[in-house]
Length: 365
Image (tube, rainbow, N blue to C red; front, side):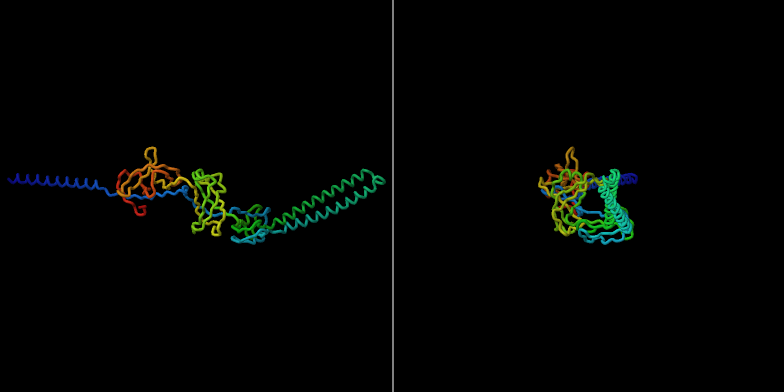
């Protein structure tokens, strides 16, 4: 009897353990079927009919900036300006040592005086031979006097040219501004020996200014060179100016692969100082487009698509879109979306149609 009772208790315990495993499995299946919503980051779609090409940050630079240098080398004796000084046309910027140039000037003057004296004597002899010929002088002597007078006059011409060169060399020892502007850099100090052509003072003219941007090739090809650009100061967006593309560099930067574009400003406010950071926006009338980051792009076969979060059910749906243009970090959509749609911009490869999601903090509602 004791053996049968023990067997019955053993069967009862086995049945209880089996039931517990079955119940636990059912609970795990129920938990797996109720997965929590997946957190996603989204942005709200916004169509803009004018700003379809976005904006870029650049800086204000002078349209004309001149690097002044001496034609010949020498020691700097004076530098009359510093960075930031305003100068007018004719303002003395710097001076070189003039002792050697003055000695050359005096030597040229002496040579000219000697040449003029020889020429005067030769001309007197020519005139005398002309009076004596043919009565008491020969043709040979008269021709020799003419030749000597011509040679002496040529010596005068050469001495005058040498004097002009010496005078120019002396004048070139003084560096002067050729137009009003502001000093933006200096390249030599008093006592320093500089070579010919070495920058000593750089002056930027204040009259006209450019806004300079580094622009991707795709934007240049899309907009062309006739687009109007609105430029606003980053530190104060209320300070604005407009202009047109004035110059596009023929070659791209070897590192960024962007092109330098200079926008000539029609009227630059005083707040547009050289080096100020500005934002340039290309204003074009065209088909409205929404700008989205490339991380939102999802390929549906041979078509482009994005994941949109349904506002009511908080589930995902794949929406085919028509891409107008791809830029470096984003792309423009013209069809397939509506203003206010919430587009997933991160982790799109992990999504499936109808998947419950939860918007992360900072996402657009």
